[in-house]
Image (tube, rainbow, N blue to C red):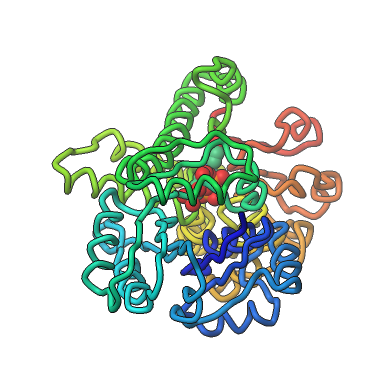
Length: 431
Ligand code: UGA
């Protein structure tokens, strides 16, 4: 069956979820209190770069399956299922700020005139579902039935659409048969194992998954250090470890550390959640520490190869926190550029998609229109994001442009031997 659906919050998760549910044939209202964003979306302009999203939004708006509004009352009027996908940004102490969840729960309750299933999609502290339930009960204006459920999203930026349609699993945290039946029916077209559980476990699965992935990255970054100290090669070691099916090769790429709006903030939030519940999650504190250290280590590689940094021209390739996105939130590039600026470097930078966002965020650096323009007169080129175009650069051309042929590859995407043979000095991570 197809449903009338409301998605509150048109950020990464909300917008992708809304567009994909509309693509499945449901009628979806995406709601956001940012009127500029809604205006843009109504004009079929997408505020983020995400492969495939623009096509999906345009198609479904045109066939009257996808609508945008700032008005929660209007958006939820016809909906049976209401997804809450508003942001849970970090507070200063690392805790997730769930005030937007409380706010929208109140407003939803005040506008409810018929049964609704309210589903938590955002990444939230365990027990948030309980609070949503309580808040709705306290703010209902009419005596209507409702259910609360948790259905965390596991999509990755850059591959969000395909992650939505081909997930490893769909987690459904429910407390009633009615809620379960609705969600099972909604997700029927998606062929993926469905884990049915209680709301608290579902909420916890999300934080525990992201923290485990972050842990895998910090683990391999720590092993990369051991490789550097012992002369081993991290790529070989990661392949060897990853061939064990119990471990798996994914998320074992050493580099300058994880960034983005999910891992760093979710890790902090999970440490805080555990602390509030009475558990000191030391393991995750070390994961965070290793990740921070990774950026310093990268910077020390620059320093030890350039001696003085002051006034030297340094080229930065890649600004977004990962390829196929223009997202700069918690991007390692920002920390590295900051460290370089403090030492007086002249920085030139290029990113295939994040230039516009970077220009409003990073001051006093030169933005270039491609990697070759960056390389001109550079004493050192830094690979910060593993965009595939950086893997296939014309290195003979680069060689002629650079003042000193030094490449420091923060993502291990280049072939050290090939570059050495071409006359480059090459420094990677853990190799
Ligand atoms: C992550 C999770 O992968 C998603 O499942 C989850 O839904 C999402 O967070 C979220 O909570 O919303 P995302 O942050 O988009 O997705 O990107 P990832 O592909 O997971 O990469 C995160 C960071 O880890 C990036 O900075 C990336 O460069 C780094 N990374 C990843 C490594 O350094 N090494 C690896 O082997 C893999």
